[in-house]
Length: 316
Length: 275
Image (tube, rainbow over all chains, first blue to last red; front, side):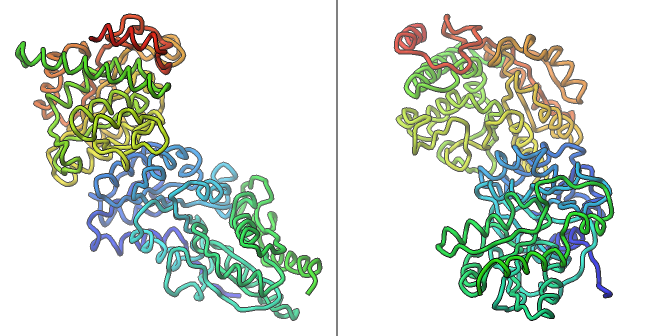
């Protein structure tokens, strides 16, 4: 299969450049990874609106909060591990608690970060950011959705965490409609089981749905580019109308989208069978993104296998 | 001479009144940080009554000078100073640290009129102030951003990240103080984690820095005048030598008064001394 592959981080930076003329308050910060996050493209066009904080992410996030207090619209950019772990206190205390209008853009999330290894692969960041009050968590699935999510983040008043990757990921035309924060996307209708994706897992989930269809299984596909706030209505409908959920995320199964959905449907009185595809409470390692997806079970085949197992255990 | 005797007498009386409020706030709340509030009182009184351009009737006035309490635990001195200046009713001080109050244990900008930035976890206030000073520069606004750091706080690595940033971006409208009272929660700063030579450290990071007596109003005003009159392109760190617990004899230079509230007897004794 010949797929068009593009980077979500490039979608982010292209959106910043696109918006800069119309939003004079928009400024971009980075922490010595501008070439890796692609904010160097913004710097080239708007050098006076770009601030490199050096390898100092804690300072970067608090600086962004200070700029936001004074009416600027800062996009603080760094790798996911630094944005949420190293500078976790600054994200919490400088940005989320006082509701500073800062957009934190985190690249190199998930194991598709690849060769750098587990130290640089953020696989806990959704869990951490979900737990922070006032923070909106966006996890776009391809270049174009990342571009639209960035524009939506700029328009949204309040702190936003934008989760991006390092690799090139398949372009998924189904994602290219309107982007509304807090709204899930129904990508395929189906009546037997619901497959749920967030971020770049969407292409694997769609492929799994196709595989299952060939076996006579009707799989609904829901995509969640917003993890928080969680769009409850399509989940409750799916809980009523299908036999359960398989969730897929390039993240730990602890604290991610799968857990969020399990809790939400159970509390809404529609508990459902649910199986999670993601990192099974382990760190990643160095390797190509493709090899890591195979080894850690993030493939369409893994999603389809979980779906079959779920259907085997839940009466029709 | 930057101040005449009458003005010094006014500021001295003001500081004594603020210190009384601090003691009573922490006593009533039965929690809060009294020692570092008393050491910083003269600095805040000088800033709010002699130095800063601000208007308590318009807390959001864009042209005001900003103040960031990076040593955020010392809310008693900040709230007492703001209430006295008229940012909110003095009666609010009785609600300090109580459920529903706008006076949180550490400064919370969205709730409290006159609080310019939320702080509390040590080290991030100086960075936030750098962002605010950078914003002023980008807008071509002439106001100053003042910051009060603790000395123990400077054991946080983030302080030195901010120090490098302010130097790189030549934030010369950023004027910081160190409340150099030489004590922190667990004891003397030089025992817990040595900071000296502090002025040399700030100079090495590209700031203009010198020491003053942080309880001498003239020295405080002179230092600020020196900082604002030089257009050096450098941020300023004024290391103000102070006494933790200043003004209450049994609290002075005693580390345990960092975060311990006075009991009824101690409260009465302290107010007597500050009468």
